[in-house]
Image (cartoon, rainbow, N blue to C red; front, side, top):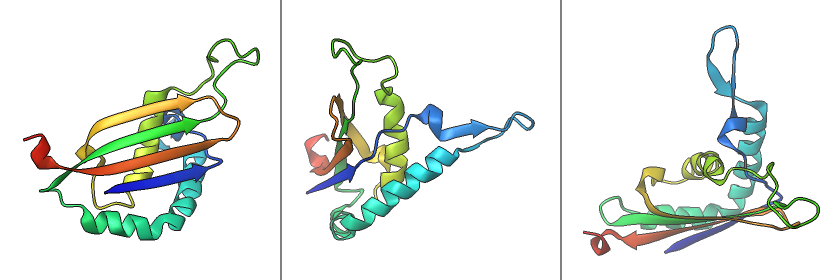
Length: 141
């Protein structure tokens, strides 16, 4: 079973942007930007409630593992278009913030993802596409 989600007009958020540190107490807390990111994605995930429910009903920790594919579409090249911008988001830092929000809606935990495919694609049509696929765990035993 596959769960396909398209998050429109959402750019990835780096883990570095998601948290701030109180300089007096040295404690970390979620940034306003991360709270907004969570709200935007949460709002869009409501459109997938039926599919998420089916995924949750099908998932069993004893029977499944998850293959996750994330495609981040946003401008990544410098204006000349001949090289990747240094301000382009770090892919590995973008995964965790997205997964935390996605998996808060699922019975499965992100620790059940054993195959991860991540791509950033230059596009003016900003979005994040997610595919979570349940695979039979017997295939890896």
